[in-house]
Length: 443
Ligand code: ATP
Ligand code: MG
Image (cartoon, rainbow, N blue to C red; front, side):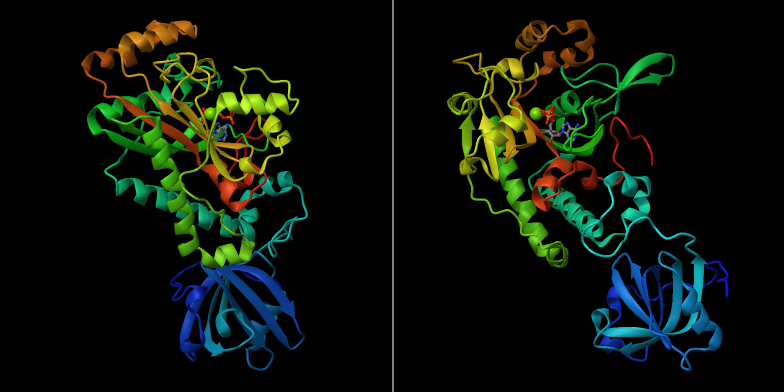
């Protein structure tokens, strides 16, 4: 028998899978979701239906279910979008200790093909590209469900944490006229009859907004034309950007580390089932986090035989080579050479070769960069010129510096990088819904 597809019509879900339990015995319910597995025991068919909240077992027995219903239960395939009307019956072996005995079933959309990968289990035997080509189906996998529920908690906890401390959540333009910092390459776009760019960071706007709102944050996309294929770069990533007036880099480092602790505690509190499913333990951290000066680290790297000079950026590979348990987990690298950081980072008053800057690291992975910013116009212009930037192009930014920009500091924290650290994700592509990279613009 071929299963007929039907419309939703007047059918509506009465309960999520997670709400079905033994205490609901004999209640009439309507559940909806997609078929995650089917087991055929001859005279008895078990259909597991998955919805956004979990799984529920539907059990059709020959004789108990009508003939047509039973043969539909025999035919139904994984991934079919299904609605089931039936009665709840306690069943110790079923998820949540109860099953649904169907009286009516509706296939809203019949799965026509077997997916090229399993959605059961914690790992997938196929390559990431096969999964990404069919990402919406891939996201039905339990592992990714758990990861994205944790991600939701991370975002919520950041918001709650910052809002409790008088921050204002802001939105800055993503279509911009000029680069905000050197280095990262921009994506050009058409803006009416002009060339414009996708914003590589909200940097200059969030700094300006401290003039009116003091403490601001934004959780939004950043766009970077990263030419290399790595497991830690996306062309479009989500950045948690924070900027605070009347503060320096020590203040925002203290804020950032408390924010990380808050994130970890909140995930432990709100996602115990996901952590259990992933067999994941949240990293432990003690505050204050260790701080290593850039110069000391360079000395250590040189002693370890690395060919690195004072003034070079420190690559993850170099950090991996440095076997040192002090560099596991979360730590800061502070006081970078001024030449390695963007123009708006404030050089130290007593040694301008070094700037008031930090990177938050997790092992060899950079999670965040932050600094005290320059708040005086002449100093900012001087730094721009030293970095070979066209000062005129920043006129729209520089003009506000005539009107009392407060001392301020801030950081940008990559959401996907943070997810890699806390959920042990190896490839950043699995920390976002639809990754963009040099090879991928679809789906
Ligand atoms: P990296 O050296 O790792 O390429 P960066 O120093 O160029 O990063 P920043 O400009 O300091 O990056 O951006 C702040 C944070 O934003 C980074 O610490 C990282 O967490 C995140 N981030 C930056 N670029 C990307 C990207 N292409 N993909 C994912 N996250 C990114
Ligand atoms: Mg950085």
